[in-house]
Image 1: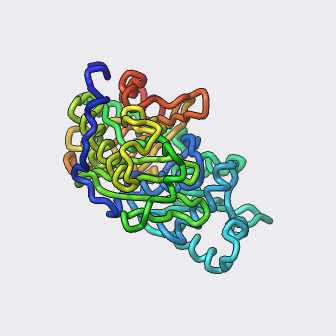
Image 2 (image 1 turned 135 degrees about the vertical axis):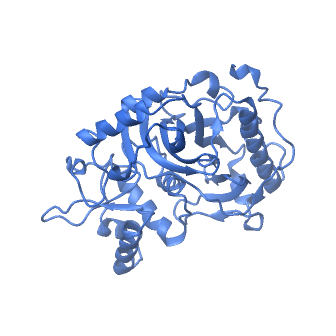
Length: 371
């Protein structure tokens, strides 16, 4: 079925459907490695982190992580002194204790402590940026509970076991959808009010955020910046959209139409964006993959020896395998490829309407062979 089968231009609801504005979204995913997926700024890095760890990162914790992301985007580890320089006016001990808390937190470890180097200040890296930081190869060593390199024998055997257990080829699905548009008049940024559920994400980047729930297992996060840029993230890791299902694409367009209507209501404008149709919104990031329920496999593969994650980068994206507990499938091995686009580079972003025709989902074998 081609993307032309879907009438993107007309499938935009005029009223909000199943959206509760102001409600905090629960978000998802395990931590990230390797090349950063064209993150535009520190808030994008932290948004990705909270999406992967299924939690909300706010207040001083977000300030700390965004400060560290500044260094990570320059491929540098962060230090406590470095964070203090970014967060001027904050107490050194408070910052140090917060970093310790975020790096020692069980279950959701936001920060990884790098191996100690004699004569150097202790260094840290965000859990979703540890493979992009220049650390002179030390990340390839086995450190505390860090991810084991997949180059070793056990890693290769693990991948082989998953591939052999694929009795029935699962259907491709997608989630973690990042969309981009712009305010038609960037001064409208000032009209987004807290009374409508909007809040300031950070005093430093001035991004205004609205979070809400689209359905029980699907959420959204809209971020508006003073320059007029609008980033919309649709989180649906627990209930991804099926790539070959017409109804799921219609659901996605419907959700975007609902979010579009929220902006119309908040700004009292019929057309607040430069893109009058959601079909023209740019897709800057998407994850496409496959879920293999353990109950359907010959012998379920356990990723615990690899901190529940195997990942490797390639020229056009990041491949990974991890465990995921899903409401309709139970415990699964998820195989996925992270695709990242930028409208500011030669790797131009597809539009929402052109996505299905522009992108070919990788096969399970492609993902496993890459990992």
